[in-house]
Image 1: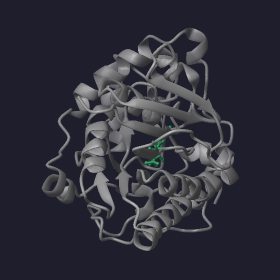
Image 2: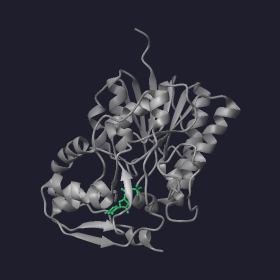
Image 3: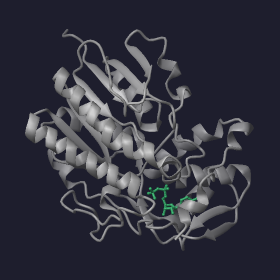
Image 4: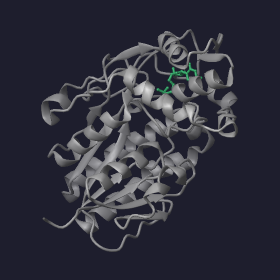
Length: 331
Ligand code: UDP
């Protein structure tokens, strides 16, 4: 058997980062995990601490990254990723998507490692093309509330392409669409934990706008497989990974009510500024190039996710997302 691959995962204590840690530990990789824990949580990865092939560094990747020894791969997943989080910490969001990715690319160059960066469907903004293909350039408001995240991620793609073209390093860009699963933070403000938290606390479900806006939700295990297939491929242009099964937020609320067996009222709140009206990935490229498509249905994924949230203590359930909410919806 060959030597185990060594992989650096930034944002390792977050929702996606922690699932990546599990995924690569199961594959027998040596995992170097890094996170500064501003939105990530150690609980997500502490089960890995006893393992010999797992190391964790509490480090802000917007500062110079030092890793001793060889690295085969770098996955850059550090970033606040929910609208509430990136409004609360806008400068860190911009820094991790610019200085942070620059450090990762520099490290990749010095280690001769392949780097995959986490981009997002937010690069398409409030899309005028539906479903979104990778060739679409997007409709982003740089100075709107989402600009700090969207533009950081767009810059991240640009610098990644520049390192690929200018320095010839091996790069991969995944555009991740709404993903859900265990370890989402109950208070991150995103629709799924918001609705489940409200249902479990016996509160009203808050729908923003008239609820006709759409999203397409991908279960986290499918995303992991798509990311891995992309990492091992020789494709360096952006790749959408997501589940094209599209649903309105109104219908999604109904699914959560059914799932939780609760009977909440629905209240309509103001639609946040620049909230995309529709979103669905065109995954033709992923199907053709990677042979990947999602396998877990929304209903199956929702059951698995609900099992995670159901197990939470009453104290955890009390965590609400609304720190910076006024700013989020201010026009
Ligand atoms: N949303 C909602 N009620 C909530 C939280 C979110 O209706 O309590 C809406 C939000 O306005 C958006 C959709 O649900 O249209 C998905 O929001 P989320 O923050 O999960 O992700 P994103 O907008 O980044 O896709």
